[in-house]
Picture 1 (cartoon, rainbow, N blue to C red):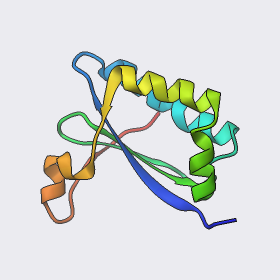
Picture 2 (picture 1 turned 180 degrees about the vertical axis):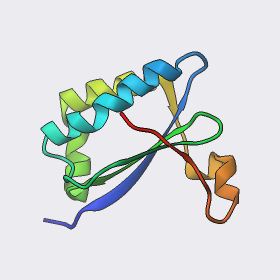
Picture 3 (picture 1 turned 180 degrees about the horizontal axis):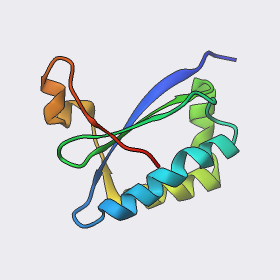
Picture 4 (picture 1 turned 60 degrees about the vertical axis):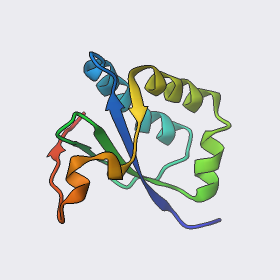
Length: 108
């Protein structure tokens, strides 16, 4: 089995979908955990100035990450993400242009 790997997922809410996005984010990692795909490492949720939510968590392995794409339960959550947010990149954030960028912590 390969070693754990850390992912940083970025979700930029569609206009007017900020609260809906937070509901999906709140359900995302518990779903991955129930499916046995992520570690018990404490995740981190942050928010950029433009409202983008960053979700930092640890997959059990690259294989587990790939398995997520085969899970109907996970795919259902990911479809909800697509309805309320754009998946984006770190480089799209204003904060990414600064050394030691700062983000607002959020909890669920």
